[in-house]
Length: 223
Image 1 (cartoon, rainbow, N blue to C red):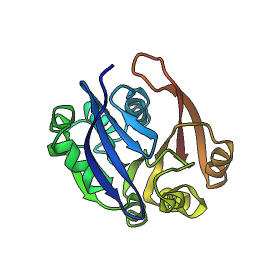
Image 2 (image 1 turned 90 degrees about the vertical axis):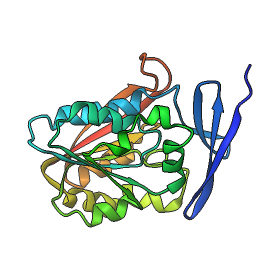
Image 3 (image 1 turned 30 degrees about the vertical axis):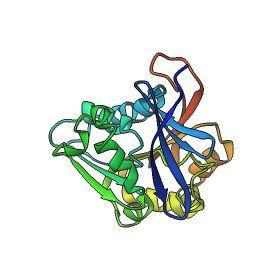
């Protein structure tokens, strides 16, 4: 078996560092001993992008906000579904993630960060949400491990009542808040409904071949 090679370390504001490993052609981003994401398991991240686009397909020139670049699977999926008039804002808290995307993972990134439809913001997606009253047709959150986070305590605010109220305010009427999670969370699903969203919970497989662990995506529609 090929031993994983440590490629880099990225500092996380107010949280433990992330490490990027490479094993052969595969990359893994790891927090302590937890594998947060991997090139071998991209199916649910792709589904987050494509299934959100399906839900706003009738909107001309949509504006999407993606919280967390990760390995770019969601961004590339979105760009593959949207036309030239769409706009996509990426909010990534960790500069090292983008350095990896443009460096050792450049072949995987495939220039998606340089797409003319994309605006990259280095910073907290929560700040982008709070500043975006009525701005977005969709907000896609793939931050930390979902509502039950691992990376930093500050991420929890995205998923609490105030964070959800801010997301609802940032969406246009009928807009979609799409939230990725590594596991089910009935309390969070109830919190979404209590925050004035119509909620659709979808289970998706981690791998793009329909295998692997089951992840959850909530699609919350602003009434």
